[in-house]
Amino acid sequence: MDFPITIDSQDKFDDLVKDRLAREKTKVDEALQRATDAETAKTAAEQERDTLKTQVGDLQTKVTGFESKTQLDTWRADVAKAKGVPADVLRGTTKEELEAHADEIKPLIKTRGPVLPDPGKTPENTPTGDEAERATVRQLFGSGED
Image (cartoon, rainbow, N blue to C red; front, top):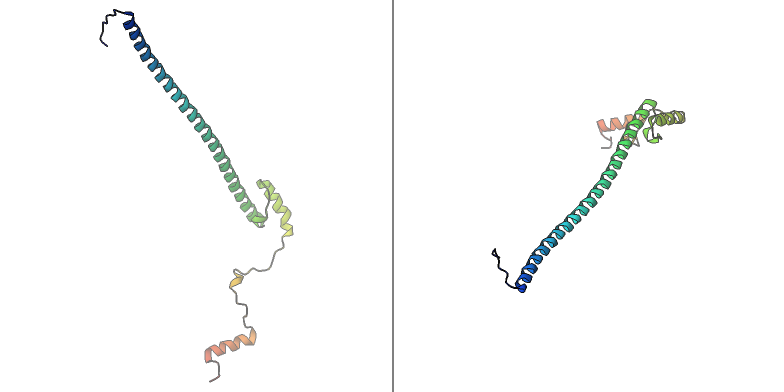
């Protein structure tokens, strides 16, 4: 539209006003759409933030649990070594509780005689005495049945 415009009728004036109103309505509609889009993006970002906060809280809880378990396992091993009791039978949630439990169960644990390093690898039918000597002689000189 070229300016200056000469308006010589009411219809022409009405058309100019309608065009101007239409352009302004388009601007307002575009602004409202941008505001709606921004509100949607803001809501999505807030939901993602809340989800991430929940995940962080869950992970912090897990880390704390793992750290507690690791600390308890370390205390259990230390107390078992110091008190001479098996670590897997100790119960308690603090080092003091573990030590107290070790003191309670230590008298109940009977000591055994010497322990073979790997009893599964020892032969079951080991010859004894005269039989052992005979087996050695047979190996050296043969069975004697020629």
